[in-house]
Image (cartoon, rainbow, N blue to C red; front, side):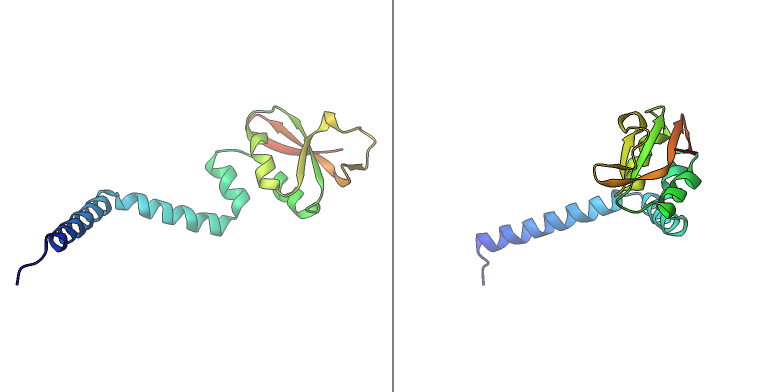
Length: 134
């Protein structure tokens, strides 16, 4: 019994798509998959803050972790120092806390935008972060 032209085309398309997928899978270096797997394991073992800062070769893990432990999620964290470098990582690592430049908040204020202000200021100095009393 003869197969229809549509059936033959469908078969050839399925074979072509299968070959394309197999070729693509063979091109992915297995070392890349293993490396990514190890990165995920390190992230889980070290924690997000430590892994992110260490992978970017930045100092300040203790400062970020202290703020995470000592401030509420609705707090305002004041930032001071060099706007480039380690301080750029502060906002995503401290989320959902609000990060504001220290000069934008009055020195005597206890709250800002209805949120309590953290007792310490996060200072960025190039590739390092540290805490100072407010």
